[in-house]
Image 1 (cartoon, one colour):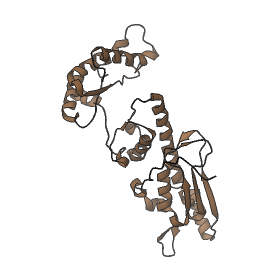
Image 2: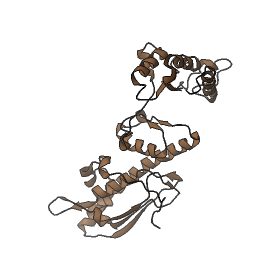
Image 3: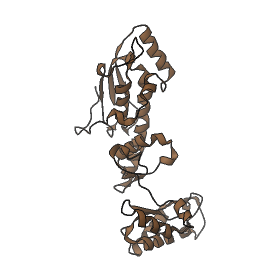
Image 4: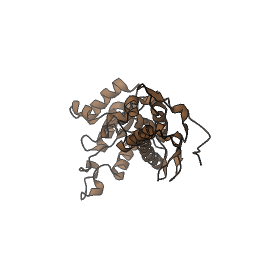
Length: 300
């Protein structure tokens, strides 16, 4: 059966938004060589098999990258004419697909491509890669959002991957339900902006005084962003949280615990050190929450 999905439909993204290297994709630069050989042979032998390509995956997941995959087909399907120029073939294909954000089951068809296979044989590597990566982001983020049960989730993975992935990954995370992303590029496809916390680097630049750094940050940026402050610089998250709350006042939106996995916060130092007490733990989070509540900072 052809792909089906929910009745409410978000408009598909314009293909130009993806900034695809169209010429390189058309010539097969990003394609597994055997697909390039396939296209070349079919064209040389004047073979034009009409096919229905069904795209599926093998897990319960949330679909991502489908608009990008369609953009690859729309902009890059075709062949070289006798004069060497590119002759687009998108109008000759029939493509039916689900939408980004649709929940999918194993072996469900998420996209059908119908038409002359020689026109898009060179694109399989590229459009499958789009789907694989963005669907992975979608599923992982969706699971975290569900586990959080309504609490806001901030998406801060940019430093762990190549910068060129930010725009597509940020869009996938946004559709999957995150409350904010950390870079402007991640937010570019819906016209948003990145947000973040007061980082360790800024605290260090203020001589390790978290409260002073937080106050300076709030003075400059509180009207534009939620003020969220890291409170583990001195490995004393309870005390630092209270100091920051006092220094920043009602401008403080939240605190962030980021205790290293090799350290035990001072609030947990009594007793024997064990692996389940190092880093950010449930107990440490509760102690910080209780301390803030006890100081009348319930809204932080």
